[in-house]
Length: 310
Image 1 (cartoon, rainbow, N blue to C red):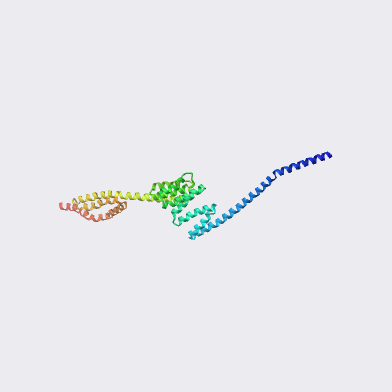
Image 2: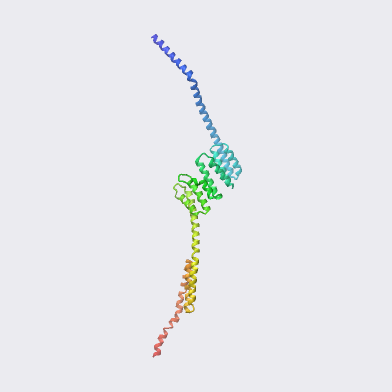
């Protein structure tokens, strides 16, 4: 038993020596890794706290700038937004968009378009770049040409672009301004037939189409009204001359034929005038019985003829 105890003690001593050797070799690395994990967690928590604090401050400053803009102090709002831009983050991007919008509100549309162009070329987010292009295109509808608008939003007028209908609206308005009514109507029709187009945008497109159709219909009606007028006058002239040539032939029919000669001219000139002329022609009809006494006296002559024969 004593030998077993001796072997056990020796074995335990060897194990302890082996563990001490391993710890001396790898202990510093284990301690370093533990310290690194603690430092990473601490840095991450500190960074999150600083970012949230900065975002909260930027949020307060951003809404303060909005209040200044709503109150009419555009210069003060621009100064606050410029301060937010230097802080970076999401509110910095919002501040850039708001600055461009305030420039447009202040009447500086060319500067606003330049600001939107800078956002479209400098932002890393694709959707934000597309939004900047659409906003620039909307401003250029009034201040630019159709080519200027198409340069900004023409690439968005595709079936796979989520902002295609907004781009179509800007292009359609620019086409309407340029006088291309057919092209503008086709563009607005594309909005009406798009199943994902917002209802509000479709309502505006419907109004645009109604305006275009109304303008086209008015132009066609003007041309149609002007074209038959010479033909009506030409038809009225021979009709008026024909009774004049027949006037010496008879006396009573001349007066009766004169209204008939005027009636075709009125009919061809205006349908409503035709209705009134026919009503005028129908009104003398009750006077016909007044002329009958001359005819009723004539049968008395045959009645007297037998008396003379007798």
